[in-house]
Image: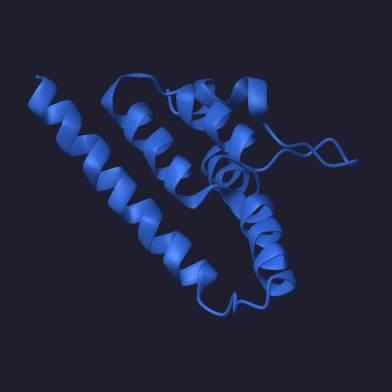
Amino acid sequence: TFQNHFAPVALHFGTGAALPPIATLLLSMLLEVSGGLGSAATFGGTFGTVLCGTEIGWSGLCVTMQTKTLMRGCGLSGKYIIPVRAAMAVLCAGYTFLLLYIAG
């Protein structure tokens, strides 16, 4: 079932309550690249591979903010980095699916 995929990576709070599985996946993919890849990889198969491609395109909020900080330090505007990273995530998901389709 869907929940079984997230048992090893469920996010828990001090009360012992866990986030729903889909929220765990989305939150881990949103925040940090390695945690997001770990959560996405638990699916395996085409869907898990496409999720991993999506996460590589997004790179997590942590890497995105580090990049934005570095850009600002170099005098570059980081104004559009989040929408660009989101577009990269969509493109990477599409390219990953296409490559899997071509590979057969």
